[in-house]
Figure 1 (cartoon, helix red, strand yellow):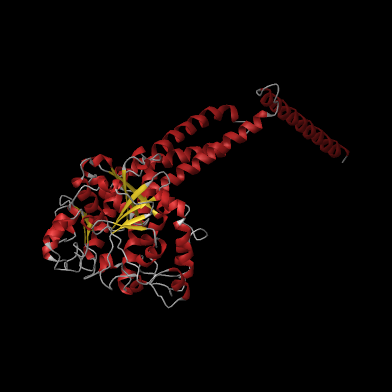
Figure 2 (cartoon, rainbow, N blue to C red):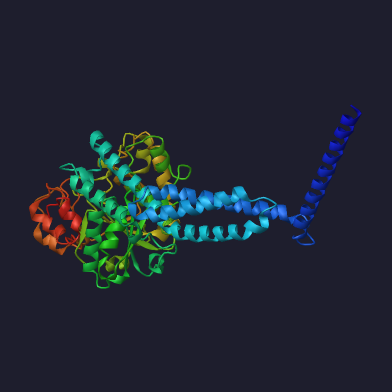
Length: 492
């Protein structure tokens, strides 16, 4: 037993000695690894190790995500998918093998794989950014389709495109343009981050158009350009709803403005000041007032939208320009804000027709016999507008009409009549001839001599119900080389 006890003691001593030797070896190894660091940072190896492991894991995750996206693309991306997965697998494997004892051996290999991962990710970034844009445009196509469907069911389509028939052709055109953007997103550029100087040059001739009808806007621009003596001095600022902006971009990218005319395409979202806290129009719409057409009411923010400009001509999208409009910048407004065609004759078309004069506030401020005027072609002196604080006056009127008791909020004309009451100068009648959308008996000589003809009324020239004797005055400015018009069955 004594011998057995001695054997066990000897074994314990040998085990203790082995443990001591092991500890000494580990301490020596730790010392050697730490010695590879700088003298000022004796513990840098663990931190460098952690950084390498983190970089490898991060790049592995990035490439794994790209691989997941690449699987959704066409078969042409199969090789790219394999590259993503291969390098991602290498990095994951290296990350799991990195330890203090292997850092010197694996650091070089890991950095090489990370370098390859960065190069591959950088090359793929542009393609995946394009895919993100395409997905966003797909969502826009769906949103437009659903909005038009709901509008048809509820009977809420704007009369400019719904009068006479369901606007299937216009719906088709918007969808075709959006699909073209989807098919080749990178070929349809967004506006440059810095707008061209022409957009803010007050020495040029500036127009504003608020519309969601890309075909109608193209006719306005084309007719004005052809009638102009100096087309390159005419600048059109087109404001539309965000969901229609891609369609406008495709149209004007494929069919650029003629003769050097400039077109700036804008969406409501490009104007940050248009929010519920600053605009009663936005607030009422957000509160559920579906009778307020946003695009129509944006005309009351012209000075805020274009702060560098001094004079702007407002055009409706259902007009055709037949004569150079540069003369409108020489019209003397006599210090007033607005110049427009007066529409009253006898007892007709006066303020009392458009505004509820049973309201005491209206009776105190306005004369029911005052002569009304028309939108379609208006000249606005933005400096006089700012001086007289017309936007603030419009805000007061909108707040007074929150319940729709002063005027029908679906019509923008009464708001204009009250905002510019006593501040409007009549335009000579040769500038603006109206009624081509409802009156079949306009004298041909009046039409021929007009600078602008206006298809106001329900019988718009892009609809089947348009008057045949007038329709050609509009269709001759349609760019029939745009293939989508034939595909969408426009009877032009």
